[in-house]
Each structure stands twice: as structure tokens, then as C-alpha cells.
Image (tube, rainbow, N blue to C red):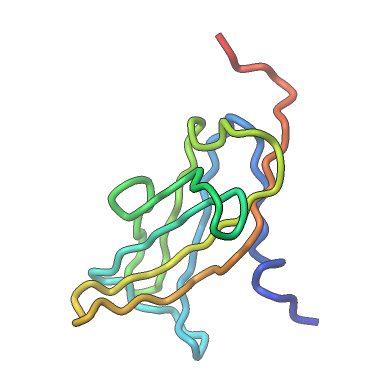
Length: 124
């Protein structure tokens, strides 16, 4: 049985862990979207409309790895994941700035990111 996208896109992260997320952007028909000249955005918040904890863009830790196949990676650094344990919400958007006005589409909406405690203490 298919699951809602927000359940399939749940991310588990350990505090102070570097995490690389693989993303495939698809069209509404399910085919890979062409990401040539596109920008990707990821935002992590403590709740809907709440405090922004992590922001990523193609200018900062999002790499389009195969534009023709809609593939990208998002890197969460140890600084990004150095937040309190708990459940957060994230979304990912794609923007095509070459269109007028720029076209924006959600890739992942209101999905959960669970931050778990590390067993090892990494503080100096």
C-alpha cells in the first residue's frame, strides 16, 4: 500500500552527525525532472511557521549531481545537526529562476526529521 509522502520522506539523524540525503526530483507524471539551471532549497523548522533551524540551497550544501535525471544531494553538516533531540519538520523546493516569474514546486512538504542523541560525546 502506498504511504503518504511525509511518511516515506522521514529522516533520522544522530546529533553532530554528517548526513547526506539523496534527492530525486520528479514531475507530476513521475518522470525525472530536468534540474538544468534549477535551484533547490531545504528548510528545517521546529514546527510549521516556527523557528528556522537549518537552511540549505544550491549555493550552500545542495549539489545537483545529475541535472537530466533530477538527482541532487543535500549535506547536513555536524553544525547543522548539533541541535536538540526531537522531531522537526522539513521541506524541499525546486525553483526554475529562468522563468518569469520564477516557477517553484514543492519536492517534499512537511516531512519529519527526527534528531536522535549520539552515544559518543564529541565535545572537546
